[in-house]
Image 1 (cartoon, rainbow, N blue to C red):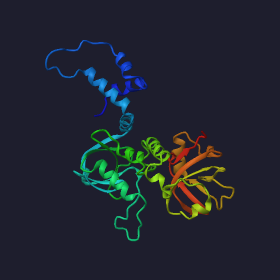
Image 2 (cartoon, rainbow, N blue to C red):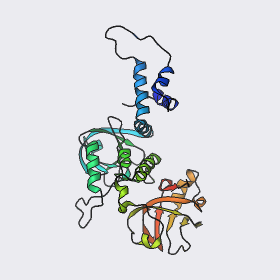
Image 3 (cartoon, helix red, strand yellow):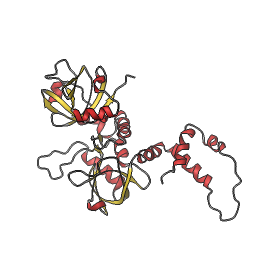
Image 4 (tube, rainbow, N blue to C red):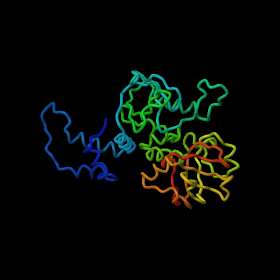
Length: 309
């Protein structure tokens, strides 16, 4: 059940209080003793507040949902892999839903010669237990359909569970955002960080390890999606493109580039990527070769600034 806005505004004021303290903060009212009278509105409000305090993840999921636009409701009839499901009835005639904002370990799915990624079957099973046969509601925060005719949606179960958040928190997927679908990425990154810190799911496997910026090792991973941490040695703009270099030799060391479209997104958010010089970053994206290993960044949410403890 979704909390109304009034209840949501009250929740922060009760954080950390005991139930007795919460109860005493309400004015005492004489309740009806009439036989057959149902629960009062006050009891209902108290139940919602107590539930939010005892289950903060539910309140967090509700806060995420409030930032998105509601779509159709349907039932999950099949799970393709850890980030794709089939629903019925098919919204706008398209039954396949790609869980936007996450990347689960990949299965071959008929692709000849494709080797299943570690944890791919476990991720699919985790999603099946979460949604198969259950009613879900689609929510959107950006582009709504991809070129394959799949809905790009966040899924919420009827009990309010945010499916993407659950997959990330369980270590069954990584954050995988796009410039045209940036909504609630900070919330997804927070769930991912929690899972990685706790070594849940994929984060125990070296296939998904956070990489350093050693160019030789990264060159052996060209064509793969990676999460990389390192310190920006130099930041420069050359014509319309920004270069963030993580080594002394830009011709061979790891580099991040931003084209003019990406720069405009950064500027719109009040971020100057040249100020990343000297900062330690966590960056994610597909590794390609341009001189040395490189990631073409398209939007700010690919970057996390790492603050020393």
